[in-house]
Image 1: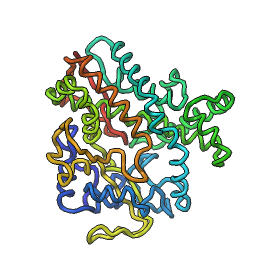
Image 2: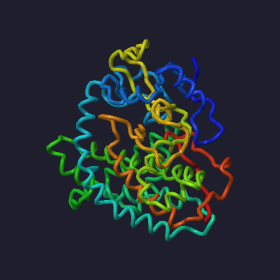
Image 3: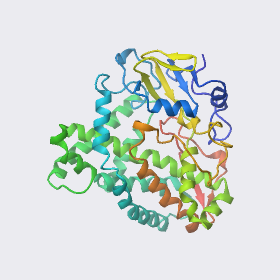
Length: 392
């Protein structure tokens, strides 16, 4: 049985060749995880799509101590939550958070996001500069602070915790960071209760009595939103720019025709992934699941690999080609069905506002070092780049 991670491709934005070989051969394959346990790897677009919306898969396990581990991550390394209440809890969380990420609220944020993009571009340090620190980190951090009602001045602390929380090598560090992040939100709640405003934390406070949620529940939900609401977007801003800089003709086309921005962002979302040691997103079978001639037994670990499914040639013509005019583009970056990412609209707005301005504001933007010298955050569950030196 083969073990993850597979040997990487030569290019840092390509998937490991072995994924493609397995995808071509069969819909599901049993592998060993990085933790050494057996799991079922799912790589085909059709099958990943179906399993995202299948109630027979979940994040929890009836016997957590006996469950297969995918990695040492405290977030996605193994089972999470109470097996008996997971599905009801998921529905409650979706119901609580849906208004916070409604289309109305997201669109009301768009002018602010555009303003923040312009300000960051106006204030870029002297070149060459690290785009990661100068632009890709501060933009989503400022936006999620605005949405949640968290002081931006505190961002050095929670940004450090967010980075530590993604660790694949130090679970104690990651667990401590999660505790610090929850404690940080918890200490904000009394002040916000006495000064209710129009932000997500205040929305959750207003919903407490009706939904029987505690301050601790709010702190945990908001802490994960603070983490997830900026960490993954940082990676997509970095890798999205790298994709465009690697295809200067498409960078120029985007500058010449801003109407291409929405389709360009969807193509960035499809391909904006760096190699992952975990292989994908862990789930556990709540009941037997038949996939072709294979049956996944109850309790077995399943790894959904949307980053590989996004390059399935059965769905995408020339799947490894970056094409900002690609349509339709049914990528699975945000999941599917009842597990579709609640923050997808926010991420799209941030990426659209950024990539509608960058080509025209910085038409000569280019890498300041050879592409092969870029370093990937290989010990992080969210991947991404360590830095992105650019000049213009």
